[in-house]
Amino acid sequence: MNKFKRIAIYSSIRDKKVLLIANQLQEILISRDISCLFPNSSKITKDFTKKGSSDKNIIGTADLVIAIGGDGTLLSSARRFGYKGLPILGINLGTLGFLTDIAPEKLTNSINEILNGNFDQDKRFFLEAFTEGSKKKFQALNEVVFHSGSIAQLIEYDLFIDEEFVYRQKADGLIVSSPTGSTAYSLSGNGPIVTPKVRAIILLPIFPHSLNSSPLLIDENAKIKITSRSRSKAYLSFDSHDKINLSHQQDVYIQKASSELTLIHPKDHSFFSSCRNKLGWSLGVPSYNE
Image (cartoon, rainbow, N blue to C red; front, side):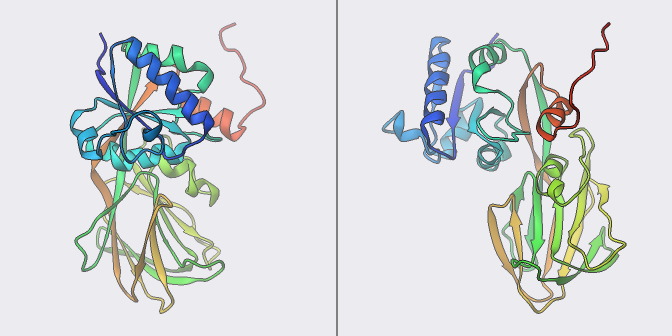
């Protein structure tokens, strides 16, 4: 039985390949009597309908969002829709694509299998950050980054976990990552790869001015506080998207958000297979069935 009756098609990019995939996807959904919705926030909506739907309407009426593109597109859809409870399925047109599963050449078969109910659900938590004196909260699926905003410019900060002082550090910044983000910016900084089932937060200093600085894994429910001690500029960014300025000695608070993202995967999805294919872990896969 088909669980999804109204599906939104979303992309944060617009090119010929995205439009071809979106058109193919629409044909599949219409053939199965599924309503196709196009958010106004999507870059491809005007190619398919004169009147798109607001994000609020998508959140209130859709059962699923299909994101076409790379992980950047999926992150965008996660912030807009996944944070509000809508499941997300990714079609991978990017390079790495740890979050987007379905390859274009497998689109028809994979989508039909999912619509037939053959899929897995994967829960991922968001990070939430806010600053002292502000009521506005920012969300990130991958990481929150405290940084100087400049190349090779050290900033000094104090780190607290659950109100306990941890250390004072001079570095280019600090990456606070979820397990989802462990294969993103954190990985480029030589942070650990953390499987999605491990419920932890990763703290990774960026080019620290110390030989004894190592990544730190803490409980997912820990409360993090960062106090900027530098008189030079400091910033916060969220999934490389928003960026806010911080004042001298302004406190930053980071914690797990109450909302979770539900990712929809084909039945043959494997995190370790993705690591082998996308990170070149091995030259081949041995057979253990002989």
